[in-house]
Image (tube, rainbow, N blue to C red; front, side):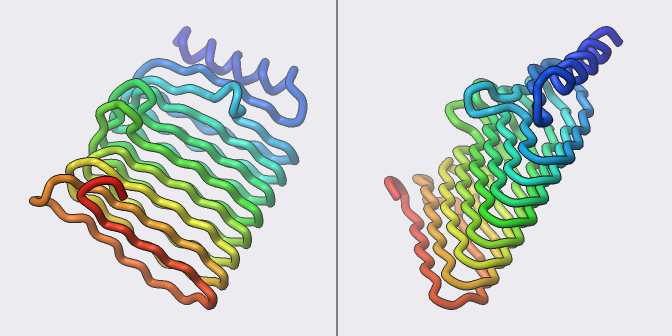
Length: 227
């Protein structure tokens, strides 16, 4: 009870004294359920210099931002069986999420949805830590979207649905287990780069792309090392 109360007070204080809807969080403990809704311009949950940090197993985090120039920058240092959902509606949104910075993030599920233009998403799962069975679902609707997704874990599954023009998608998957990417891309002038590295010959990497696009560039590399 004390932990929950102190967290609520921290959120309230951050929102009152920081302008333009700013929230900074340092959370530790298991079984967290957190819902954050921000409505207005220049919303922030963490920054590139001061990220929101989460540590604990079985966490459920849902962050919704509505407005322009939104920023979400968060790190999950350790979070087995964690569900992380982020949604932005507006233009010029920037989302940065790193899972497994210094601990295990096995069986994590990340869902991201963006509606608007000039959205930038940078997602990393694994880093130097142990992680298995990562699942990412990403839905983007708009133009000039930039998606960078890196999975340094075993059994990484990516599902994308991107609608719009001038989309730039870069994905890297490493780790010695089955990986898969399923993408549905609609729009013009899309640039898609996929690298899958797997040094074990007994498992498989899978890419399934359904693309309805003109003037597109699609580059897929599947390698045993050094893609």
